[in-house]
Each structure stands twice: as structure tokens, then as C-alpha cells.
Image 1 (spheres, rainbow, N blue to C red):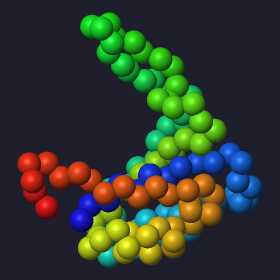
Image 2: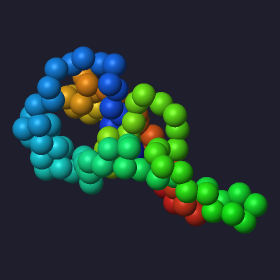
Image 3: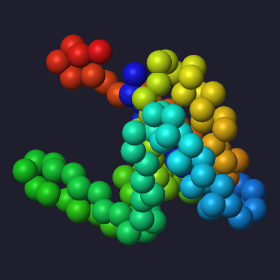
Length: 113
């Protein structure tokens, strides 16, 4: 089962500085175990644009698609047997202490499992 794990930054959480080396080590370990298929950091939300098409008109808006203090800072694509396993993995990610990790299973295309 593939699961998208969004890394959600929360400016209201004062969890101290993120230990980037520890985060990188966690990523390496999960990749070596075959759990993390891909992991990427995203540029800050203030560099985002949102595109909508309404009535044939393209509307491009500066910023993320939602008005929120939190923003998606990155993601991992996990390959796990089930959602419960993904939760156990997410509990070990240091970034869960600095924001939130949203786990969302992929919706398979064409009836594939």
C-alpha cells in the first residue's frame, strides 16, 4: 500500500530547532528498509501559486490553496502493508514533534490494488 505522508509545519509549536542530521538519518534508514520510496522538501508557502479555472478564465493567486497558519513543508511516499504500519512509522519521525504528519493512502487508478 502506498501512502503519502505530508509534513505539515506549524509555527505555533515551539519544539526547538529541528535536528536536520537526525531527520536525514531517519530518512536514510527508512529508505534502506524500503519504506520511504521518495521524500522531498518543498519551498516555503509564500513561494506557492494556486491555479483555478472558472468559467473558462484562468485565475492565478499568490500563495497556497488554503488560508492557514500551517503549511505543507514536504512529503514522503511510503510503501507499507497498511495504515496502522504507517502510523507506527510516523511516530518515529522527528518532524511529528515540530508540526504534524498527515497520512493519506493513494487512491488507486483503474481498480489496481
